[in-house]
Length: 247
Image (cartoon, rainbow, N blue to C red; front, side):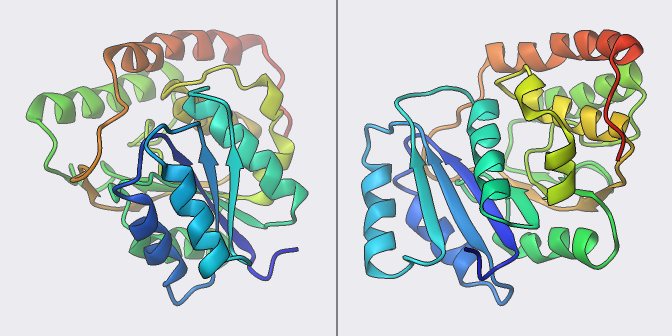
């Protein structure tokens, strides 16, 4: 099916202020990308906007899976990964809808995998200092030291372990048993990186500037962050005993 080798997966819940602009920004890039929106039953009409864009302009490159409610970030991406594999995409991206991830960085992540030979490219806020704009200082420190904590516990040499802006080669997602990924919140991001590392895939951090959303409401919560922090210990424990498939 694809006329592009690249699919950008964008989970949404109440993103009516952002969804049309992010779709146009991604599909307007010189590099050809397709988009898959994973829509979790937004009551604000996000899905209706996507359907209009599909009908009026982007029938061949904008796709959507509608789910019945908020089922978790991790399950949204797993759903998208399986769809991407089934439909033959070679490079699969994770991206937020709110412009905290700059669409202009997508070709840089693509180049790290397609041209430089890496298996996973991470849009990293912390590989070259702290590149975060308009976040409260408390949240910056919480995120930064969470990544330090994950590195210390897991031994993974990644500066931004909670980053949600990534590119995977298809074979990474085919190798990982996606049904065994247990975390649903932001710990999902850590678990996917750790699993790719344990499988032996080559990972590169590409420096990006993260800009806090201007429109809509953040989905981050204390509970989600706690899952990420305490789930790391379980990942490390599993890492001692679990057999990971090899790249």
